[in-house]
Length: 73
Image (cartoon, rainbow, N blue to C red):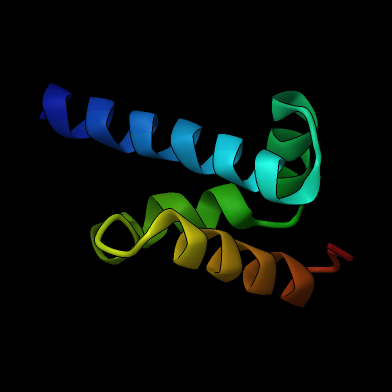
């Protein structure tokens, strides 16, 4: 169980960093944006499927989720 949690955390951290790179944000700003617009919730809820796609696809998915929740990036 602990290993699964560690994997999820590491994946979320990597996605936050990739989102930051894609939109020219710092990691803190990326996390805050994703948290505010439900992207982090999405990553946690959909980890089983999301971790099987590329980071580019994950960033695109995060962008769509965040836009549906009021984000503008």
